[in-house]
Amino acid sequence: MKRILTTLAVLGLTASAFAGCGITTTTKGKLKSYDKDSKSITIEADGKEVSTKVKASTKGADDLEKLVGKNVTAVISKHGYAESVDKG
Image 1: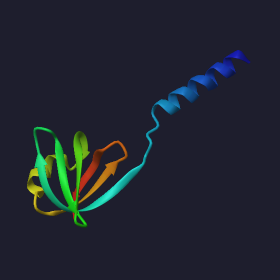
Image 2: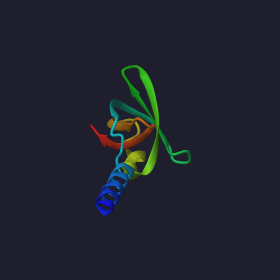
Image 3: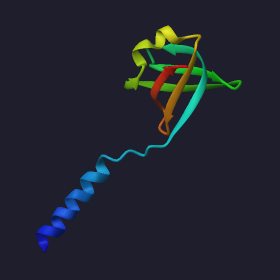
Image 4: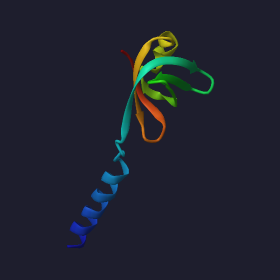
């Protein structure tokens, strides 16, 4: 019985350690600027400016300099980092 409870406790703790919150917002608009030094982007959407940080794991981060001035779709996590930035 001890082994079963210990195994269940370990499985429960490891599963919660890898769970992400998953709360995101999608922003569509024109990529106004990309600052390579601070790793941040600014998107103009519906008359408002949305600024967010870019991480190395952000999908599409390699092509951000080419997308300045073009329409983009960005998926931004609740924590303020862009998960992906795509042309479109």
